[in-house]
Image (cartoon, rainbow, N blue to C red; front, top):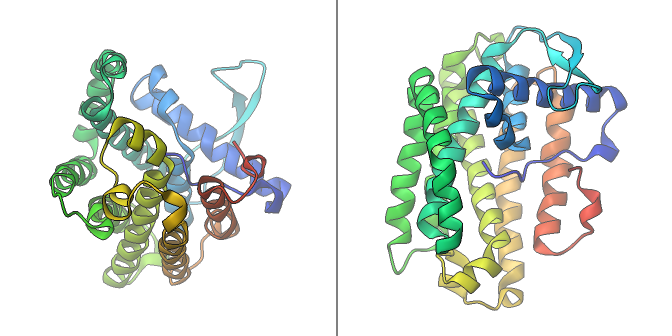
Length: 297
């Protein structure tokens, strides 16, 4: 995933922000433990959101303890002293999606950037092998997404919906798998829970793809890379900006509606903050509608 799922810090209570940072730091620590110290550099807020969602749904209550940051030993951090399953799942999602994003960059970037990405590829390939061994179904979902995305982008008449579908389907499958990995009384009706999580993941994936496409539009015009908005509406973004905003708003509203169908967990207020406030702020930033200082980096 690509780093668009943020909190709105202003609307979080102090304790909630500390919990959010604690999960972020715990995920960083888990990635270093499972993959390597360098793998921590690919950690994103998107995967922190996924880890928090899994923790919120499962029965086991995470506990936090104080420790030192590996990057800054003088800084104290909160770490989850248990709940490694949620962190391990989120780490696998982060590694798999980042690996295939790197492959996509190698295929689409100018020559001088491809050299840099090629140098990184051995590290990412090693991490991806570990992730695939631990969670083959997650890796398969991401790999299928890349194959389907390639097919969609090779279609000269690819619509915006067709371009979104592989990413949306990938996150739909991953979210649908959550009940298979955790124990939860909140997901007692497995079939219903899977349908809700599948819908939630589908529209979340759709929103991520759309916002990433619009964020890349200037570079895609410059390098003549595939972009569904350029293909369908042309290079004058201002001409169809309202249409893009409507598509994003629809996807985001479906994410919130789907989430509200789930039984609320321990991190409900933080997750609601992200969906209802953080993601719209990020959306407005990308669309050019707000001040970037509103986003918590």
